[in-house]
Image 1 (cartoon, helix red, strand yellow):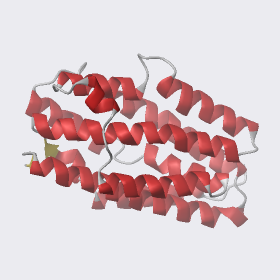
Image 2 (spheres, rainbow, N blue to C red):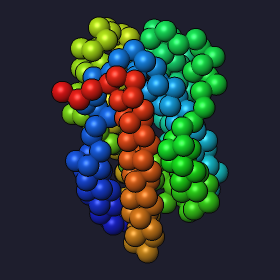
Image 3 (cartoon, one colour):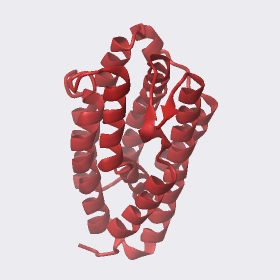
Image 4 (cartoon, rainbow, N blue to C red):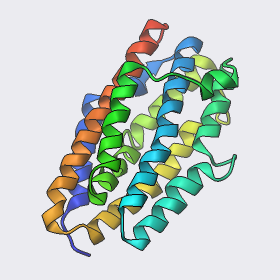
Length: 227
């Protein structure tokens, strides 16, 4: 254990994000707003696979590569029942979207800008920067805001817990993914690179705020409201 205090520094950034960008979790969606959410979050989920793969490609540490491959690539996509994207797509179909309108969804301008930021952070930076940038995304809204979001969708749309499995699964799985990534950062990132990792995480959270605020704005144009 190198002991750079990275976990605490990263969670301090996450807490700031949670305080400043919680609208997406509190919206009461309409069917049309929910469809938009599924489409844009589906774009993000597909892009996330590539980001994790870029971190793997840049990292020389076998333990880290194995963790990401097992937990963030295979666990999330290897089987239909655990695939985050497939669970999300089933929610979209439940809301009346044809499957092709989920698979072929076009990113909004704010989604596109956020994805360009994440590509740079994970593909063109060091692996500590890339891993920190992705690790904090596993922790945003955790766990209280995520539970609020699930309740809002259940309340507004009359969906069952099974229908909302995408939200429930993320609460459980992302805790493991985020905690595991934090542990690896603490163990392998030297103090000389900790500052760059924190800066990358901060940039990643700003990209997430841009992404989620863009979705929230679009959902409001489709009738979603705050209590």
